[in-house]
Each structure stands twice: as C-alpha cells, then as structure tokens.
Image (cartoon, rainbow, N blue to C red; front, top):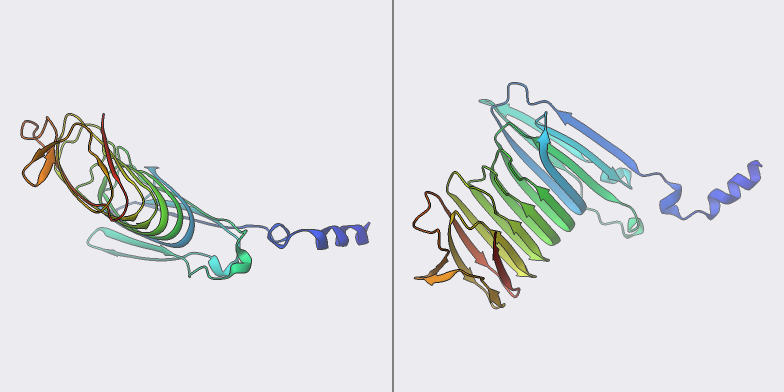
Length: 247
C-alpha cells in the first residue's frame, strides 16, 4: 500500500503535488479616519469589493513560497497606509499555479486605492463605496471597474494592453474627474443620464459615443449644464476603440 501511494504521488503533475498556499490578513479600521491602500500584484487574478467591516480583509491563494505577499503599514494623523505586494513572478515552471487575490475594503471608511497590476484579470466592485481616489497602473490586464454610486472624486487609469470596462452610472452627488489612458484594447464606458458628462477623447481607434453631442473640444450629454454635478472624463484610447452607453 505504501509503495502504491508513492507511485501515485510520483505520477501526479508537480502543480497538483504541491498544495496551493494561502495568505490571509485582516486589518481593523478602529480609530482610522481614512485608508490608503496600495496593492502591487505582478500577475494573477484580483477580485476586490468594498463591503467589509474592517479597513481591509485580504486572502491570497498562491502556488510558490516566493509569491507570499508582504504587508507594510503605518499610521499618521488618522490615515492608515497599507501596502500589500508580491515579488515579480518570473519562474516559468510555475505557470500552472494560481495567484488569486480577494480583497474586501471597508464600507464606511473613506479610502484611496492604488493598484499596480502587471498581467491578469481584475474586477473591482466599488459601487456605493467610500472610495475617494482610484489610481490604476495595469500592463496586460482585463479590467472591470464598477464605481456606480461611489464617492470617487479622482480616477486615474493607465492600461497597456487589454479591455477596460468602467461603470460610472448611478446618482452622483459630487463632481469627479476621470482620466483614462488605454493602449491596445477597447475602453467601454457606462455613463449616467442624469449627471452632467463632459468627455474628451483622443487616439487612433474608432469611437462610438452614443448620444453625446460635440460641444467645443468636449462631448456632452443632455444633463450637462443643467445638473448640479459633472463628471469630467478624458480618454486617450491609443490603438483601441472608445465606446459609450448611457443608463
């Protein structure tokens, strides 16, 4: 029986023989006035939400000890800064291994989020969140970001290769500025009908701007100039197309 087990283990693929490893970290938001969250992920999958009772709840499943995330944190004047990062994933022998991140941010604490993502798939559901600032630097990434009903005031997305899907629908109770630089891949925007929209585009790809109308150097919607608040959006599409729908 023992010999049979040894033979079975020997025949298993390496990525199944060595179990995935798990990293978890919960950081309380007690006494924190504002959070500044930094995520540095060289490659993998990221799913992020904002419905937690703590400042940040993080779970990472990874396939190599070298990929274990590290955390540095500091607090100054009520602002807690957290930086989660991994080393570069360069070992091709681990190509079949997973690197999956799940992060849940506070639903009540005002937060700035800074993300550096090398390659992979990213889904950020920040709808109805207390997010104030979002800064994304992405390489070859499929990027889905939902800011519907959020408190975001400043958004900066820089994507190299891959599709960017950004949901800005909902009822906005403040102004916001959104800057998007896309390289190769579509930029798809879902915009609100009842909040003023001022959109400027650049790039070599096609444009489908829906019902937006040319207004000087910008494109605007019917609510622009009549609604109390305005979303100012600048999109440099690179070689990809820019598509707009209003809801």
